[in-house]
Image (cartoon, rainbow, N blue to C red; front, side, top):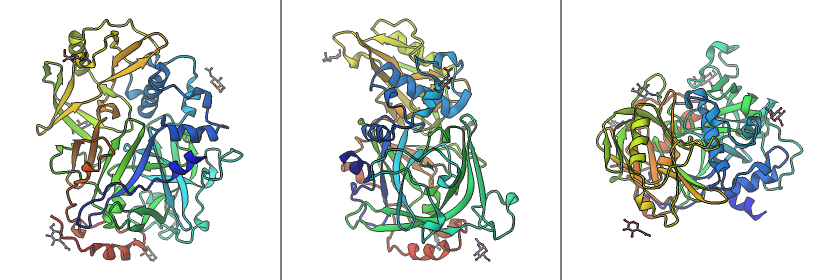
Length: 488
Ligand SMILES: *[C@@H]1O[C@H](CO)[C@@H](O)[C@H](O)[C@H]1NC(C)=O
Ligand SMILES: *[C@@H]1O[C@H](CO)[C@@H](O)[C@H](O)[C@H]1NC(C)=O
Ligand SMILES: *[C@@H]1O[C@H](CO)[C@@H](O)[C@H](O)[C@H]1NC(C)=O
Ligand SMILES: *[C@@H]1O[C@H](CO)[C@@H](O)[C@H](O)[C@H]1NC(C)=O
Ligand SMILES: *[C@@H]1O[C@H](CO)[C@@H](O)[C@H](O)[C@H]1NC(C)=O
């Protein structure tokens, strides 16, 4: 039971910040295989396959993560399906386990209701199950009284407002019945036939700042009241909603910033125990590494350019563009980079290579010698566009089988797109600065108070014409313009 208490306290007063009023809101994130999510899913045993929970470091553990990557990106990632058909499980079963990499708890509405939502840098909308026509099952599950899979009810929250079709965030105006009717939404995701649809609503998201004042903020945001879910959303991929962190104006970070609550930036870090942090408003520090995003105006994504790759003592001068995606566990590279990279890794490894194992999603695996010394494993580094260096702390994964230890280069050959996954971000605080359109990174243990020497946010005044949000929001804007901070 105690676990649930720990789990639900997600607004952490950890990083005391700038003297100035640049606000940062922090949420604790939990990896899908972290202890709290495990406890939670055990309690929710009716539809989460508890017996299938993989031992950390086992083949099944990595296989499930790679499987998840593939589900997330569909066929664009792996060349052949067979290399990803693992072990004894059946794929329906795997989709049934939690489908995203990181979860957090948010509180919405008045009175506040808690939702355990999946975090996703690959999409934009925030939605929760609501006025359900077709939602993931939530009844008859033996939750503790501390935690329920909530269902949002606009009538049940005194601060809920409808978002009408004349709102600039209403993207599907062609489906509107009239200017002042409810704005409908529908979003499809890349993974197999997965979608959510319903209407947009406005309500309060409860946030707390990180400074010593611990200011409580009731941020008015727009989100999806998800009435009909399909595909893996019915199969509990995100049973309690999805929190999009993309660049479009509908995402919560965009709304918080356009309303003046925070600077338009957030950071993420990933601790080794599966608990990490997401910090809204965090622009990182002056001494962080930086590289610009490659911006596609129509569909902005966290797309960066790597100009050179270093593997041990070998420099590979192949430029590549890649998505920087914290929601993908491993790193996926297209040829010719994949082959050059893995072959030069192989040529510098001194341990014996293992024969291919269909259960392991990686091609280059080695027996770890008894006098294992990981300083002998070739190190990996990326040179980013602009010259910034990103040393990869965790290019390998170590698998423990019953008899021995195996390590693998945790890179998979991709079919269509390059993805720098979470394994290359380990040990860093990664900053998605959407104002300056740069990616930032700095070494971090994820718990260091030292890390908090953040750069005060630049003024984000309304010269960039924030989208006219729902009626109630316009007033707020002015009150948050006067935070009295002389930004650098
Ligand atoms: C996978 O599991 C589901 C549910 O247990 C079952 O209905 C289905 O037939 C299984 N598929 C295979 C290929 O074993
Ligand atoms: C939409 O129309 C309503 C009713 O006239 C009005 O109160 C509201 O301000 C309008 N919203 C926007 C964003 O124009
Ligand atoms: C990333 O940006 C490059 C350059 O603009 C583009 O060619 C590439 O298609 C983009 N990749 C993705 C996955 O969007
Ligand atoms: C590992 O190898 C490095 C370089 O050869 C050596 O300096 C270090 O002492 C070794 N560490 C262990 C634990 O053997
Ligand atoms: C907004 O900031 C820009 C420069 O950062 C400044 O030129 C402009 O006057 C400011 N606008 C308002 C309304 O404060």
